[in-house]
Image 1 (cartoon, one colour):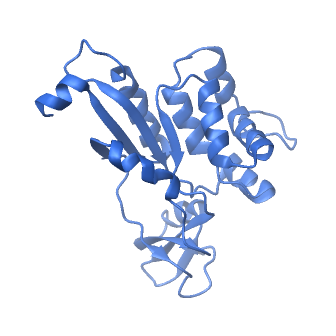
Image 2: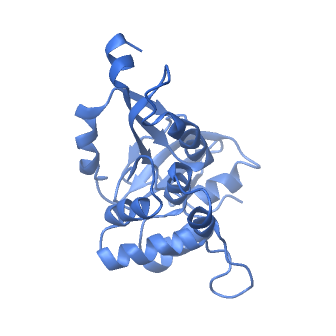
Length: 220
């Protein structure tokens, strides 16, 4: 950290997904706005992957044609200043065996707000305000993207949940992004001129591919 950065504080962006990013943000938020510490952050932002297709997120993705909200919900909770009722509410997962079983309230809240506003990124912003988040959260893209992996026997598997299942019996040669059109990252361009440091919460192995080499499916 330079002397200039030490005086004014850093503007930090973290990139990733899953539990790694939310755990990182939970630790970093204590440095936001603290001017009596050697390390302090003027701002904290997170760029969150949106390739999840399992569990509650996957169901909402298929039924409502929205981006998966789960990883973003976890990041909002991690950055929340309200560690009691609202955060507990966003974590709450419905039990039972009906249509709501397995869904988290936070995912449903984001899905409903997306339909009300017509904009997933705006729904994320408004939800963060409700939780009084100590940072800004951005989906990595607002385009429907999915992971596709090539197994060591040459077969391909489409979807994060199917890739996770396949890893139990096979090794992966590569993991790429599969999309029907070019992902849109324009909403993130405003961050570039306002960035001092960028930290990754995942190992970057993803490339873009227009289509799998062969029809992807479940590994047997």
